[in-house]
Image 1 (tube, rainbow, N blue to C red):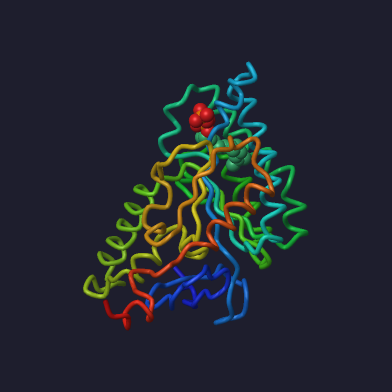
Image 2 (tube, helix red, strand yellow; image 1 turned 60 degrees about the horizontal axis):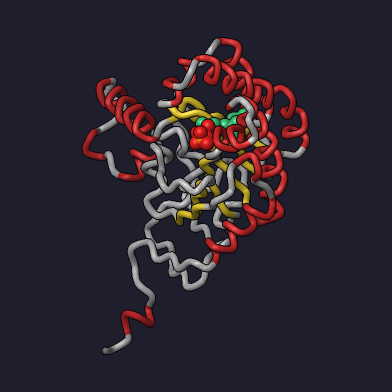
Length: 276
Ligand code: FPP
């Protein structure tokens, strides 16, 4: 796997943020010249589709369909708000436990979204990546995913990652398996495995760690999303149900993020020098 450039992300820097230190922050391939500040990476757990539908006496599947419209609004608004990477949780490795009809609707929605929006995303210089265990998906969905990723591979204005059949733990397990296979084949010396090498084997490697995780609907859990990558992410929980989400909600989440102090385990120099 190609190694990504490691750069210091100085943009979107919240109040009081000290140097990122040794934190390996990343830019997706082609976004921003090396060493130059990138935009924000926001990751969203799009929660509340079912409750939105229930409140209207509608089937859950219609909540998910409205969720696609919220996703489109959010993708459109994100670049204006200083975001250049957006990662959304579309289907978790645990979501297979839902009723077959709902699972099949979610599969169809990803397919329909990629089919309907690919030309526009391509034109607007958006790179699309789907994270997660692809081989469990139907062959036609795999084909559409491959087409979307191939056609947008050289796009550099914005990275849209859809986590689909994704789980943080499975992604870590898959990285461990890839490392073990490389070691067994004699291509990797196990003593050289450190955090940077491990991270380079995660499916999220190119997009790097999110600065901000948003979860809608009032729930306050990570639910197996980006477990490794969220080590230093800021968390913002919003009470809005996902189908109602839009530009003003994303703007409010980013405003809250910008008011946070990020120290990455360090301390402000003034605090270190202060006595008493
Ligand atoms: C959680 O809400 C949402 C999901 C499990 C799926 C998210 C999917 C979309 C927003 C559809 C668009 C996605 C793509 C990738 C095209 P929930 O159903 O758990 O809501 P509830 O907690 O209110 O029941």
